[in-house]
Image 1 (cartoon, one colour):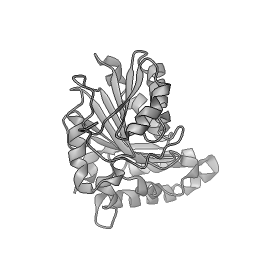
Image 2 (tube, helix red, strand yellow):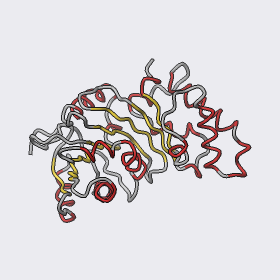
Image 3 (cartoon, helix red, strand yellow):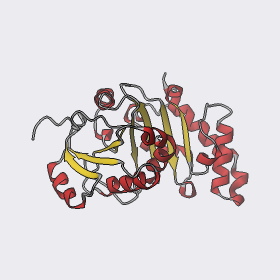
Length: 261
């Protein structure tokens, strides 16, 4: 087996680890998948166990299109072999990497989670380019990182042919949140080393922390109400997207351009 682009990841995975990004996909990407001529979705680098790929397939099949096809792609041949027993119509697994070996079929979405974390920052743009060039014209690449149980997660969305994201989303389990900057370890590779004074991502997280602290009077009413109030304050300074329905989920999305120096 030759030609796969990329390196083998640690493979860490857990059930429901990617539920937050899947929930966002059902909100933000659902219309695109639903209207696609070919509803092909790729889960790149699913890890040692194929469970999060199977979970995404189940969610998309139930809530978006019953004819959706999901292909889990792994650069470790053993992981592909071990995943084969759970294949069902519409869900399959194959060997490959960033080149997305789906032949002449272009995915409507690629999810690549906890994959680029091990690469140098200088390699990220090239990986984004390789993947977005494989997308269908209206397709999405969702690339991000989360903690081991999926309580802290940050991801970016890119469109077909792009090498710069359109949006960045911060998502957290609100009840266990001490402060919004706890999400910093999950920042994309191209931002994580820029979380220092003088950089826009640093100032954003500090502003979010201040907004969170300023809404401490909401503590008796619950962490969800406090988070929404903090985002409302944040939105006075930053172009926060979506609305309270998303914020109540512990989810905040902004245009990527906010963080470009």
